[in-house]
Image 1 (cartoon, one colour):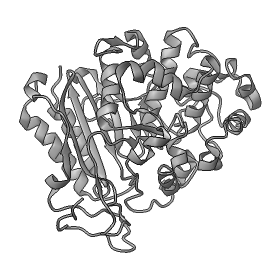
Image 2 (image 1 turned 180 degrees about the horizontal axis):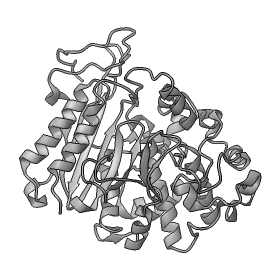
Image 3 (image 1 turned 30 degrees about the vertical axis):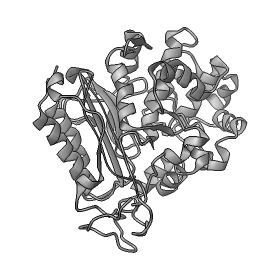
Length: 426
């Protein structure tokens, strides 16, 4: 690839904000995938371009080496673009490091946005009568009842109310991810921090492993195999599973720790939730052992195009392109409110949860203004997939930079608000 054009911002050695080299000519590092006429979706070209200007502004913050955005309205892909580099333009990459341009098909680790996919595998098994989300985890994993965890249900886990939000930090060591027996033992030996159902505390890692093990006990197959066969293959997805095949590792865009290094108390909260320091998690996500493992809460791999398509399936009531996966009532149950602006003891702010989804709100919402019917999930950090039935909208923002705090953080909120304002109510 040709050298980048002159740049307005160069990260210096020891740059406390850990920013990328932002090209002066953004068009030179922009890729546009297939898009449809906005008029067919009841939108205008000006509305679409206003959304993309907000996305470009977020990219100019310098904390995202790559950014993808895909917006679907009433089934039409009105915006499908990527900007930046899949690898080679990180904050500490030398100027002469080969740079690989991102495109709309480049897959990235979507971190906690994976939880929505995990949840829907569980809901699908419930739909088919293989399990029931009201059942106890110990009904499927008898040894899980140890240390007073016998009353925890699948619904408690899906809604982050199980009382077991944290696991030992070495669970996320890449050399341990393939040790299935050890992981199950850690899950079963865990001691609850509170009575199930009593408190809301985001289960950043633990909940996914619990649900993944339940799926394996019920089906005899790992959750990756079940997801591929029952959802992804019938709909022709290329990625959007937990990890990738070894031969696809090189295709996955690299994640970068960017922005100011988090300090206490923010770093303390994140380390408690993730089990490791944030920068260590980001670096681990680029390891082939991470990328080929199964971490139901955090190593889904998808492009914004595919992640938004997954949410389009849910927005449409479980049927897409003539293929029905879910009953409509299954999705309605998954979206049903379990926590109403309750203070989350892990994240440190009030929020709404369904059975596997973060829910929107009329005022303060991840998904923009007046989005009380929206549902989706945030991924660490600034990655998000969601559907908004009131707007006939399904969308995804995928970013490769993993900043926690940086001056342009409001640009993320501005982008989500712009989408909410430009996509009309149905």
